[in-house]
Length: 198
Length: 198
DNA sequence: TGTACATCAGTGAACGCGCGTTCACTGATGTAC
DNA sequence: TGTACATCAGTGAACGCGCGTTCACTGATGTAC
Image (cartoon, rainbow over the protein chains, first blue to last red):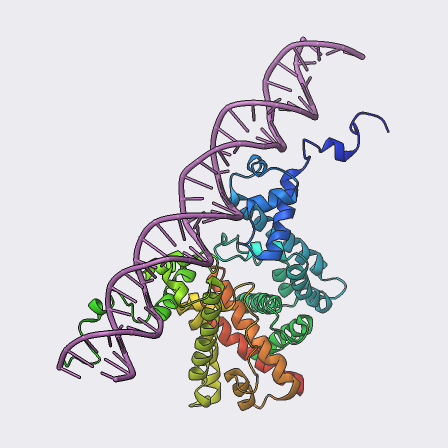
């Protein structure tokens, strides 16, 4: 209860200086994008949601495009983190971990729709295409002994399948849980590849 | 060159009455959506593109949402037509026709991006989910002897794969042609399913 | 410990713009006689 | 064939609104002395 570092209730302290408006604006943008789509949110709305004047955001972002770009970049990081955590170096066994990968993708789209939509918004910067070598998916395929050209095409097919399922689920076009479809889809792709080789 | 039915050059005839403004607005909307995204076009732009005043569109569409909704509905029809033509009752042989199905989906997204984007725009009406029995994809799977639950899941997986590939291609994230990926992806899914059964 | 000052995150008024939509209107078209 | 009239697809001026952004400003914070 000493004065330094904590000169009163946070609320009072934030009466003027918000404290972390930069992050608060990103959070607000994410939830507004989730509600109304990437083009359906405005700087004013974001500012209002943070309890701040309309011009305050410009102390933190050059313009609206800069805010959306940072939202997308953050979305890329969050997705990568989820994927890496899901793969978890293939523990306890690669097959189990592989299934978690797909679920992580779906969970990201579901639980952080604002970041997800910002990341894949039409017209967004192409985002750095994930490096197959360091991406969790690339590592997972390596752990399965899939290498060379097949690894590349399979990784893209799994990515497209996940992305397509997340997208169709978002628009309410899936008559069954996406999890089941991604599990069996990935299994079929892997088994199909194995059948090719023999 | 008789007068009736053709009372002069079309240009002169359209000096005042446009003739087919309804369709012209849809075409204009499609190309504007293709350029700037589903939210990036305005009624004014569409009217301008048709050489018509800002208020003219309201003689043909109740409001902007109605125009976009009709664009999406038309997109659904166009996609269905392309798919049906690609399948062509499985001629000359089902495997060849099956590959054409995937290509048709990609071609639609590529050649009619306005309709494609309107159809899958976030927030668009869910669109009537395609009836598996009458959809070209459903017929194709039936021709392959895939029936029951497997047909349902496989159809959704192929759809998601196609949709994901089209989507990733649109955002420039595919390092190789989508056609190759969909061909081998569908083949792997089919072969993987076959391996399940045995 | 106390004071002076630089810094900088906020305010709030104001701007110009483009958009969706309306409204009373007008000119062209097609039909009934 | 010619004329009168109903219909209706267009015009163009106007509206209210919300948005992105700017600007001069002000109040809080933290640091140097």
